[in-house]
Image (cartoon, rainbow, N blue to C red):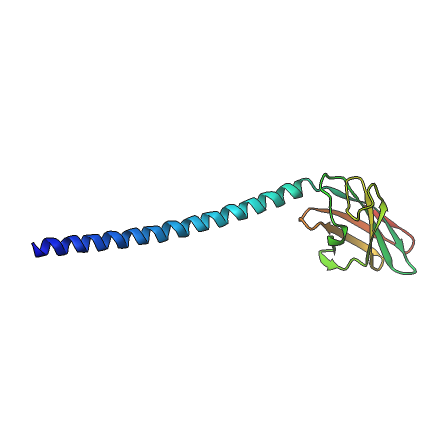
Length: 155
């Protein structure tokens, strides 16, 4: 009788240990799945925002006396953007944007909305540049520009 009782106790303890281990495993798995779901939602929102973002480098102007290059960009997408969060690359190298200003504005709210045009300026020397402007959500436009002492043209 004693061995049957101790067998029941051992089986009960093993069952409780297995239940606790299963609970820990399931709760950790649930937590990981919840984190993956959250990350996928963030990625989906970013991708959706990027797909709704379209802007073009329309034209450029170069002032040889100050070496200032002005790029004119028009937002053609449905996604409003913060023009102060643009990133500029010249020939693949990060370049500082000296100023951002609105040229054509529909709503005067400092948000770069559809059909509005902005001007970004930076200092460069004459030459040929691969210009890439990247929005905060990763959308970008890329053009090749040719700058001489007297003109700037988009190729």
